[in-house]
Every structure is written in structure tokens, then in C-alpha cells.
Amino acid sequence: MLIDCPDALCERVIGAAIAVHRSLGPGLLESAYEKALIFELADLGLHVQAQVDIPLVYRGNDLGPAFRADVIVDQCLLLELKSVAELTDLHLAQILSYLRLLGFKRGYLMNFNVRRMMDGVRRVSI
Image (cartoon, rainbow, N blue to C red):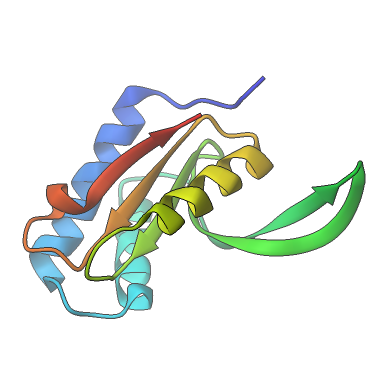
């Protein structure tokens, strides 16, 4: 059974990302947006974890941490942040893999290097 999150949480997270983008604009490194978004989400009273180790389980064996999730909100929503010219199929494959490994149903791929933040937000579900 996959872990899902409420739609209201997703709306709050997107609102926070828009607030960060309005304040900072495009063109910064991913790490700057991550720090600002974590601040914004925590200010909303949400439980936020950054750079969370994701273990790799192969053939039933836990091989230890192999990946890192950018941001996890309220133990149910994965945020994979980017600051790139455009999102690619590789970015989509990355977040889909992370969702499967975490057992989460939903996440957002967020590219802050856009003129309008909503153009950089992509909802991803498995």
C-alpha cells in the first residue's frame, strides 16, 4: 500500500513554491531554492525533511543509502527540485524511482528556472 497525502497539503506546498519563486526569481542554484522552500514550508507548520537518504533494496537485500530525496513533506509527499533549462524524461524517471523506493504515491517535480513557477511544476503519481 502506497502512502498518499491530502490534496490540501499539495496546495499549500505549491503555494509555498510560488512564494519562493516570486521572491527569488529564476536563475539561482537548486540549493538556494531548497533552503528557501524548506523555510517557507516550516513557517507553514509543516514537517519538512531535506536531503533524506533513500535506501536501495535489491533482491530483498538492503544495500544502504543509494539516493537522496531533496525534500519530504509530512512523511507523505516527495519534492524533487531542479533549476534547469527544461525538465526531461530523465528527471521524471528519477522521481518515479524515488517514489517507488519510498513507498509514496505522489510527488512534485519542481523546476525553479522558469519565468512562471506553475510552468515548472509537474505532479507525478504512481
